[in-house]
Every structure is written in C-alpha cells, then in structure tokens.
Length: 147
Image (cartoon, rainbow, N blue to C red; front, side, top):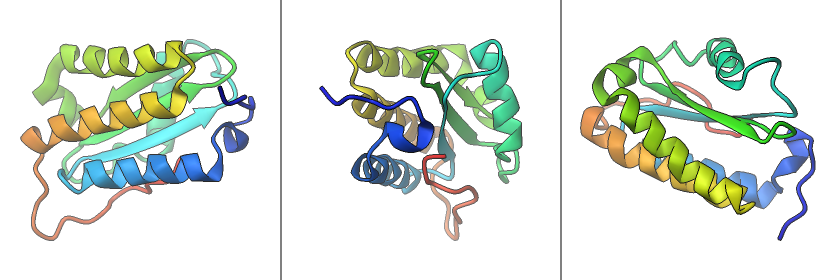
C-alpha cells in the first residue's frame, strides 16, 4: 500500500495526478458537464458545508449549463463530499449523489484513494452523458487538474 502524505500537493504522485486528470478528460469527452477534484489537508467545519464554500470559490457555478461537479476530499479528516451544481441536481436527484459517494467510499475504506476517485469520475461521466451529452463546439469551462 502507498504511504500517503497529509499535504494535498503530495497526497498523490505526479503519475497518479495525471491518471486523475486523464479520467476527468475521458469523462468530460462524453458530456458537457465539468468535473473537478479538490484536496485539502482538513476541512474547516462540517465537510459538506465547507465543500459548498469551495464549490463557490472554485467557480463551479460558472458553467453555461450549471453542470459542474466537485469531488472534495479532506485528507486528515478522512472525509469527502461530492457536490453538483443546480442544473445537474435537478435532473439526477439525491440518489445519484449517494451512489457516487458509495462507489468512492468503498475504495477509500480500503485505502484505494486513486482507484476510488477514478471510479467515481467514471460513474459521473457515464451518468452525465445521458443528461448533458457533449455538444458540438463544447469547450472545457473549468480546469481539469487536481487542485
């Protein structure tokens, strides 16, 4: 098992970060949805509430179709949240978020953080292509790198 550092920039190796970015780009190739992954050492307060603040700070609401998704991970707290913007939530409902979180949590509980993120990103991409198929002239509205 890989020993993980508690610092966001060191938690994943550069190769692992590249694999996450590749998964995001692969998912976004099927949809106009925008996916971001954000790591912090620890959240300030309750994880979902803090993730919502980060959602705003990262400009996740600035997409044309309001279809941004954030996977937020608090390393030291061992907590995460998956949040979607208004346009997505209106179409997929609460069960979608629970299903994605369940997929990620299963891997995280085994210490498989990279695999959990990639599985969650893949699941998001497959679902979003139904509700937000990639459009002609679609542009990448948000950065793909792990922040």
